[in-house]
Length: 70
Image (cartoon, rainbow, N blue to C red; front, top):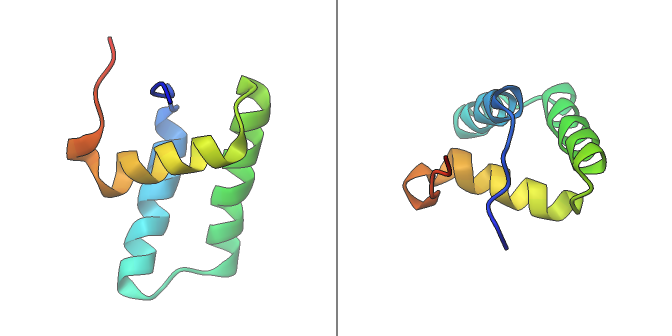
């Protein structure tokens, strides 16, 4: 799978949710916001939602594994 050019606002939303998961403070509303943003981006970009979600989680949770594209 080729790298997906994720928008900064989507990365920030996922990063916030990931921090909340780690502290045990994630709310249903926050999780829903991430899910809806991922689904909207995937639809707009014509990319399967699961591919976007996997790339987003990798970018936030394992940034050293993400190859930067110019």
